[in-house]
Structures are given as structure tokens and as C-alpha cells.
Length: 435
Image 1 (cartoon, helix red, strand yellow):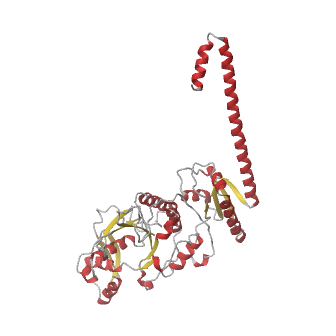
Image 2 (cartoon, one colour; image 1 turned 90 degrees about the vertical axis):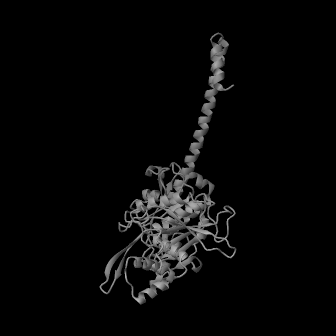
């Protein structure tokens, strides 16, 4: 019999029996005492928590950290790491922010101590930096791990190679990353190789996919030249022809019917949404045929600003979350870049947050338009190395084994032929070499 039933019976019985009235008074007194005891215990716990928090704030102050309550910055469960960084950093470029909460501090005090030591060393080398501890204990945003947010948009050029931002983020690893080239026991019947293709707006992701389709379809450049090119993604680009460098707009594919491609607005990502393209590979020596699926994505560095980049990245993460597995993440870059886009680092952080740290073993770097640098990564190599080290991502391999240099000029040549553009013999030889 529960408490409500007991009290109900006592009240009914008390109508005819004074003894029952005394029982009611005693029961109420016992209930009040138990409630007060529970409230006192809860109060003692809160006081203890406040004492611990007071000691933490004092220690932070002694180490020249400012204490900030993340909840007061309107950070809630609808935020992500990018919007949190924007709310906390604002326009102050001198901030380095350690984000944590009481549970994380209690479960991993050595990590908290290590992060505080790292930031103190950083401040000693640059006294203008502001160290901030952002407390997420009272925010509805569930912080999965301690993280350090950068204070500004980092220039990864060689002149700023000594600039360091220590950034760590992790989440529950998703067992969706398969080693290459071995088969995974998780999906023994799935012979499809899934590759996520990422890169800045205008780097040539869609052109690369078109070129890849032609490489698989035609056995030789001559065969491709005498046939109509395979164009699975509509293309539009400008070519200069003749001695007077006349500009000709080259188009191929049904642009009007392909609502995923925007070829009319300069600076905006041509690919508007993620889309998968699956190709049959040639049979191997065991007479087995595998498939490769390339996932095309909207480019980052969109002229509509970081908000659009945030939306594109959120869309990409949602898309790959529904993919059974990934074999590789391919970053497409140009070989002679003067500066890496700031969103490149953010892209890596968010991918690792979703896929787990093992994703770093499956990253490949592809450099397109590499004919001008004799098929080498060019100046971009040093920028990329500096960025990986400064963002504490030096566990990502950037070596010959996972780096590829090529161009897609042969495909552009094939499309230009369909538009009636003439080429000299020496130009044709260059495109043949590209193939």
C-alpha cells in the first residue's frame, strides 16, 4: 500500500475514531521529517559543489584565467562547435578559451590540468592573450569532451607558421570507418568503396567526378576523343581561344534540368547539395567487380559567408551519417594556394567529432590543376603541413602514399570539342599528356 492509499484510509477511519487522528498527525510529522532530511542533504551537496567551484575559480584566477558561465552566452542544445566559438570569441582576437564542465573535470582532472598548463605556456609567449574558462555545467549543450577554442581566424602562411592554436574535440566514435583496402567484417557483402569528396568552392570537385567517369569509360585518349564525353554533372566554364584570347563559354549537359548545380552565380558553390555517384570498377584477378561511390559535396569558402559554410557542413554531416560506411575522405586542393581557407580546419574538426579519431587514417589529399607545378603539391604543401601541426592534427598523414597530383584538363578539352572549339596540334598533345 503506497503513502496516498495509507493517508486516504486514515482520513476515512478518523471520522469515527479520535485515535486515528493522532495516527494522521504522526504520519504527517514523519513525512515532513523525511522531506526536510532530503532537502538538507541536497543543500549540503549543493554547498559542497559550490565550494569545489569556488576553489576552481580561485585556482583559475591565480593562473590568470577569466571564468565565464556558458549559459549566459545563450549557448544551448541547438548550438554546434562553430556557433559556440562565434558566441564565445565574438570579435576579440586575443582569446583562448578552455571549455569544460564539472563532470568532465571530475572524470579527467589530469586532462584539465594539462590543458591549463598548455594555455599558460601559450600566454607566457604572448602576453596579449586572454585565457578564459567557459563553464558548460549550467548549459543545456552537452559537451562531450574538453575543448580549446581558437581566438581568431588563423593565417597559415609561412609568415605565421609559429602561431599555435591547440584544439581538441572528440565524440563517441562511430564504427563506420573501414580500413583501406581490406574488407570490413561489419559489411562483408558490401563491395562498394565509399569516398567523401571535400574541397573549397571552385576547386574542381564536379569536374574531377566527370573526368573520373571518362577515365573509367574509355580505354584511351583517342577513344574518348572520337566519342561523346560522359558528363554526369553539367559543366560550364570559360576558355580563351585564338591569338586574340577570345573568351568562349563552354557548356555541356542539361543545366536547366539539373537543380543540384548552380553554374550561374560566381563564388557560390556550384554543387548545392550532397549527391552520390556510383561507378563500376573493372573486374579484378578473382573476377570480382567492385563499385566505387564518390560523394560530391557543396564547397566551403562560399561567398555568402561563414553562415552558408556552416549550413553546408551541417548538411554534409547529416548526409554521411546515413551512409553505411566510409572508406576514405578525399580533400581536393589546388597546388599553388597562397592561403588555406579557415573553414578547412573546422571541417576536419567536425568530421573527427562524428567519425572518431580513426578517420585520420583514411584521409587522402588530391591536388588538381597540378600540370603547372609539374604534378607536385606546390606551395600548398607547406601551408597544409603548418595547418595540421598548428591545429594539433599532426597525426594526419601527408605523405606520398596518400597524396595524388593530377589535372582534369583532358575532360575540359573533350567538352570543348563538343562546343566546336578548335585546337592546335601542340595543344592537343598537352591534353593527351593530361589524360
